Image (cartoon, rainbow, N blue to C red; front, side, top):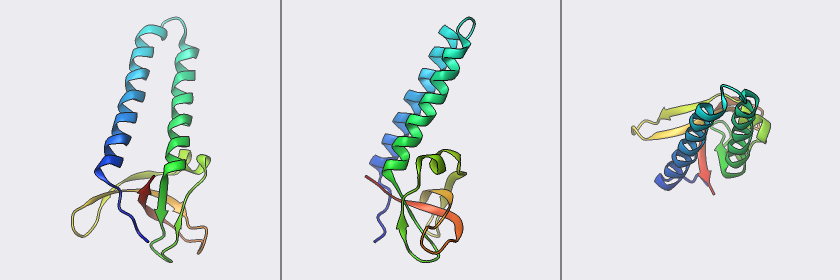
Length: 114
């Protein structure tokens, strides 16, 4: 069953990204000249936290076999991703992953955020 990503999902994702980017900028202003290694730690830990959250919440739809699946945190962190538009002009998020059921690699659309 394909469940569309809602506006609430988009809002929540954008808010989390704004918080993350703001913390990087503020930390850069305060820490970069002397404590650059703490700034790098903030960037890396923030990326891992966002990848963990996204891997737990996002489900993907295989366009080949119709399977719904989730990916690991590592796959979520390193896989290419982006935005696309379907035939009706609606925007959707995708991630380039391999379907665990049929083994095909594709730009799998995000179908659900819990």
